[in-house]
Image (cartoon, rainbow, N blue to C red; front, side, top):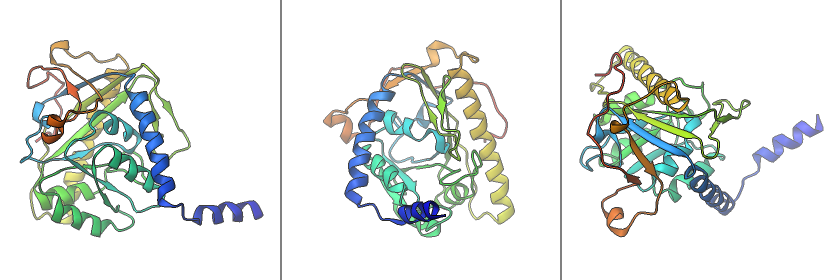
Length: 277
């Protein structure tokens, strides 16, 4: 009984912000070094869906599962992206990681401060890409919440589902999201969906219908990426891009460019899926 009370009291302690920032910087450097060892490939239906190439006057909402958060931090740092981070104390770490990756951060979630956070995104992010983990911050795992649908409807921005997969990753089984950690030097794969459009002024039933549709697409993109990483799916090499994290030049920073990508065709011959429009 005493030990339980001790741990509850410990969790209530406020960790100073400089401690979170110092810890985040160390983890950020580890992420960059770790993920730079990956054999990383990316494929997409439309090249403009990649934030590295997307026109600055055509922002989008990118959604990915919570378990794969570190990969875009490593591979798409410096992009014109705003991320939604919960108000929980332990989210200080993610907020600082995002800042080191040169992302803009808005605090809030579907559980605490979510309405205010979505209003901030609506009012201040019309010229930025937005990144959301629709099953975060507490789950359930791989279930899309309605927040991203509401946001897409209000801002009239397309949603792009980001499927990510590793080859035989380690997983933290006790974590609600079964957080994935890629093995050093293993395959990392990313698949971006076409734009998913949501009409304005939706009622509750319509929001739920679009939520289910977007969830299905994100699950399909994840299956593609995971099977590709596991060697169960093959994509024509001429339609596959490589990308490694790198420190952008001054010119690249001015152009909001992120990462180094090989040149290639504008579309990828990926499997078709339903309800993509």
